[in-house]
Amino acid sequence: MLPTDPDAGELLLRGSLEVEGRLVDASNATLFCAIEADGVAAQCVYKPVRGERPLWDFPDGTLAGREVAAYLVCRAAGLDLIPPTVLRPGPFGPGMVQLWVDTKEGDDLVDVLAPDELPPGWRPVLRAHDRHGDPAVLAHSDVEPVALMSAVDVVLNNADRKGGHVLHGTDGGVYGVDHGICLHQENKLRTVLWGWAGEALPDPAVEALHTLDAALRGPLADTLNEHITRREVAALRSRTKALLAAPVYPVPDEDGRPIPWPAF
Image (tube, rainbow, N blue to C red; front, side):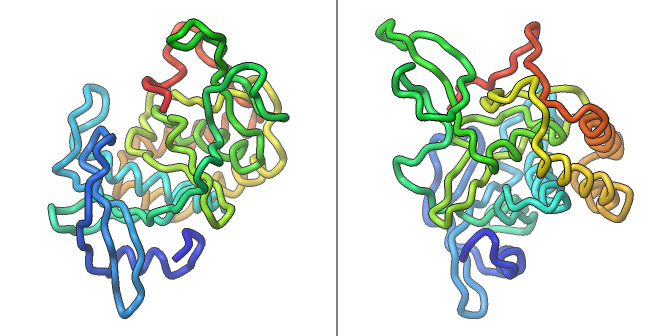
């Protein structure tokens, strides 16, 4: 099943979950599962709320809901950049369940490279030296879906867009995952996708923001209130309007911490 399959959400909500393993590098409990309903089977990620590590700046037990809210925002903008994501009961209690994305091996969209290995068109973000003292560049692809993801991350206020959270699916799609620390009312944007900083948003991004802005004036706001606070929904609406008023990618705050650590 592909992330763009219209029946994916229903399978995630109704299917029986069977835990097959754990992603050990994840900060929170992240379980790899098989899911099946009515003879249709797929793979997914299940993150139980009880497995969330407390954070000093996000309320306890809210990360799963934020993942769902991020998906709803992206879909309301008319974009398929986040795999289908739901909140439902599971073997270890309620949690976030998201369709698994098979990725193209060796076809990364974000990487750390030697300066002379930078692919044509890639956007450098940070120049540094590796552990051997050799020059290195943190950079990302400049394909349109990544540019759209970078714009959506601004309104989502994504505090943790690591390189490993940008996936190139075997279906050719580009997908972002791990949106548990998004949608805070205070500015917390931390991302590796700074390559367009200070440049005008592309037309498809502006169109998506207009679509989202209209949705936020309808039932979407009430749906989001099931996962985040009214104040956070209001902040989302304000960020969307502000980006439409000045459709330019933001620049990093020199006094802040604009890149998540670790970056992958």
